[in-house]
Image (cartoon, rainbow, N blue to C red):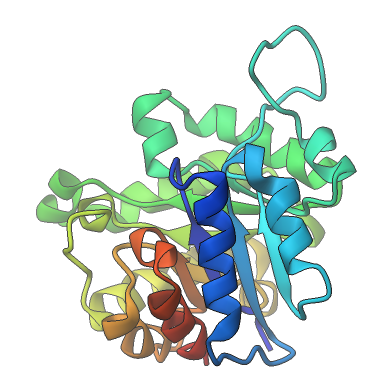
Length: 253
């Protein structure tokens, strides 16, 4: 059974005291993670130790980084390398979020290097892909996303690709309140899986978790996650509200 994942992306939000308050409130709510389900918290790097301490002894709950540098070390002021995250117990790193692609000009080629860096320290890349509004309106979203996958992931072996979590994020739905319908989400998730199957075979493709990442919230999570090829969500704003994220965790299938 594929892992079903509720991944919180806090982005550049919260103070130290707000982090404590959010997690304390979350742990006071009622949720359950089955053996094949995970909750992952991608937090600003300054809070990694704080969040990891809060998650200690919590079953199937993990802290993640929101980005890393492609090099293992060197004169790159302000950057953090994958081995550094690994050394403090971080085993999941989000890569290629649309905001990183847009604001920091991250390319498919650069992200291929970052994927390699994360896998080299036996950690899990949460690789983001997705199309902007103009591509969706033109009806070419499938080929757009396929190109992202080919350029950034298809150099990997079958043994490596199954260690990657893919997060499909329709850029037009991020932070806009717009959401792909469950049918739209299933359609492109199924297409992503078919692209993976064409390269690696169906049995390998069926092992890879594909998350949906466009304005997931309590009100739509259950319907989205009920789709055959939607294996959870990468959650932005709703992950900053304990009751919302609890409902999203409980919506995992």
